[in-house]
Image (tube, rainbow, N blue to C red; front, side, top):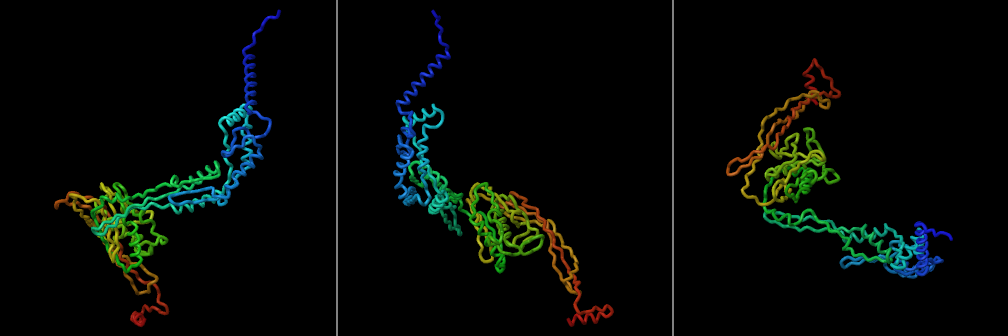
Length: 473
């Protein structure tokens, strides 16, 4: 009699696994998860259309028949307010790849390992498997259509503004802007098209509001004139007058909130011919020479004085190399593109606004803000610390005839201290040193001619004859 040998644990587990596999395959066969043809498995749909049990060719015909009429009607509808835009398939070159769809439907449950295939077929049969549409469109054409639509909707935001004329004060409310997100709309359209070859877009979901920086409420506290300053110019100098007006308009109605810094160069921009500026005298290297934008410094200087009288904080200011004649010594502010700027800060506790005007021969700049109580009177005091006399320099000039001279008058130089003085109840309560400026003198130049006179001989022995020859000439 042979002795009984118990099975090993490994053999038992192997036997159990084989039995489970046989049972699983049996269930799969019963449920139709294993077939011996190339037809599409149960539960598989294409964009919601049942194609189970169909061959690839049969599925292609069914999809083509179902979507045939879609290409006759607009497939994209876009709505906004009371407007509607309809876009047919032909306008965006839409193509539905039917053969690829049928192949994808047929491939469901036929990829990966045996277990993965059975699992995918089971999930399709129980829960369904939807193959999205495979389409191609001309994205540029779609974007161009959407851009055209956006042009009817989009608008830039506009700041609120205030018009002050004496005691008259009129506020124009702000305008909210709209910006249509074209890329998001295009993506949403393509996503919807892959589901059912149609797309419905409500534009309200894709329009962003853009708000201006200045709103009507910003002018609530602007009720009083804080300071003003006026300078004069020669209106007969047409180009200079034009430049003054252009720069003046650029800074007019500028609102500054508390702690905000104003930059003249940033606000006015580059003084170039392409921006409308013309050639007029400018100071370069202590000389008046023609230059584009001449006269703009009178605007920065006038603003500087209005700012001083408004008791605002000066951040950056530079004096001219020569003192201009339209303001007292030490009270000018020069500006140069990308180099010298005039900047100040609104160090008050409320909004302020700059208002400018050019009338006849006067440039006026006013600063308005919240009415102040118990404010000191402000006096801008310029003290000449030193007067520097010009020198007299003699220079030979070969363009000037012998015996002739020309004189270019010189100009005195100065060292100037400028203070902002506050007076309250007839008492000086503070004195702020604003600047110590030095204006170099301009030497007096005497030009002596060295150019010989043609067809004339100078007789050193007969000076009277020489003098007679000059008289004749």
